[in-house]
Amino acid sequence: MHFSGPTTTVLKLGTAQTLAWASTYYLPAILAAPMARELGVGVATVFAAFSAGLVITGILGPRAGRAIDTLGGRPVLVLSNLLFAAGLILLGSASGPWSLFAAWAVIGIGMSGGLYEAAFATLVRIYGRDARNVITGITLIAGFASTVGWPLSTALQTWVGWRGTCFVWAGLHVLIALPLNLSLPRQARNRVLQTLEASPTEAHTASAVPLKTAVLLATVFAITWFISTAMAAHVPTLLTASGVSLGVAVTAGALIGPAQVAGRLLEFGVLRRLHPLLSARIAATLHPLGAILLAVVGAPAAFLFALLHGAGNGVLTIAKGTLPLALFGPQGYGERQGLLMVPARLAQASAPWLFGLCVTQWGTGALWLSAALGSIAMAALWMLGPVQATTKENGP
Image (cartoon, rainbow, N blue to C red; front, side, top):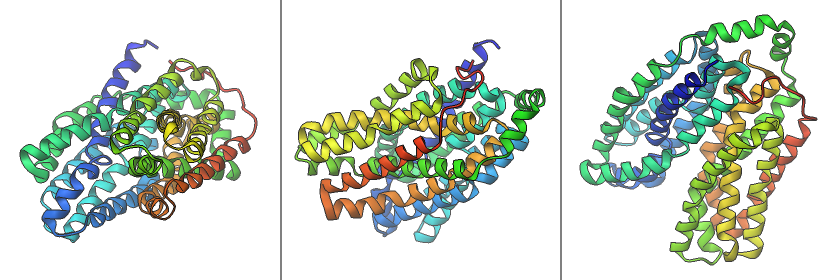
């Protein structure tokens, strides 16, 4: 295999994923307030509509994964771009709560087949067990979705208003992301099928997934998505509650993004020599460690907390794609990934509200909850058992 092939795929799919995340998951942070003012609803209602969309994403995720297993990733990703564009046009045309929820429902359907899980399944269809490095490459590029999306949405909101911003993002899906996804390789199905035909024992093993392993992995994904989403919503509040100024809190919080990318670079350069289970175990220790330090030490640990949380979250995002591949193999990867992520999407949808209640009640004491949850995820990873050797772990 020539390296130019995977590199081109990473650049295309990584760019499309950056646009997908920036125009959906990271959109409410910028547009919720002006949207709520004009529609005459509370900001909480806007986020409730967003959360409803995430619930739909989780419910439909297994079906989207099954479609990728059957048809390949291109048609599913292309359909997601059309759904994103339609949902964003509906969002920009919303006139009240009902149309707001309807728009996010359409976007939620698009997210079920257009975010990381679909991208990872697409890469597994193309590269089989060699997909680990290209999965990392996608997350390296799309890790800048908020870095690109938030300033662009802010600028657009200033220039053309929140409705115009939605329309511009819809246009970008049609003009940029859709052609990129259309140009993805076609030969995915043959490669994976050849791999499985050459190794019937592996195919049988991949289809017989132990329930305990699946439950443990789903628990890890649910907890880590809950923590990630909760921190994204409440880090500035937690840091100011620890005793730092708002300016310092914002500066420290801004380090989380670069720390995520640094963690992914570490995974690409060093940790890829380890089994994905080992790198996930290492990464899972970082948030509990940082949370405990911030809870105990307070303000002096603010920057260290941001770096530890960000680096751990960055590697664990990759693990969501590489662990199911390493533990279960490529056969049926898309549907299995969708099923494993259902609890994670539900946890993600509830995280801002539930953790917000904890922060309101306990202040920095809420960090003990996130540290405890992170420790449970870490224990679940150890309960998955000894690391088994996998073939071609280092990828292309």
